[in-house]
Length: 51
Image (cartoon, rainbow, N blue to C red):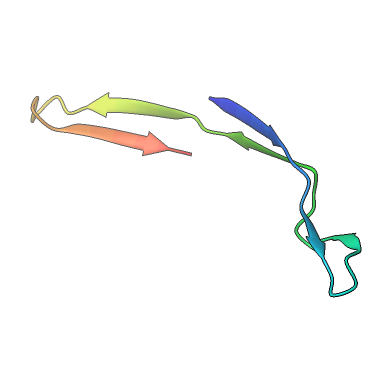
């Protein structure tokens, strides 16, 4: 699964001016993958690996 988010992080100071915050990276991307394995000796137990 691949996700992407676009955003703008700003704050307003005491004088009313807008400034970029230190968290303003403008975008974030995430990649998630995984595989599920089943046990041959214990068929009711499943293993899940996420990375």
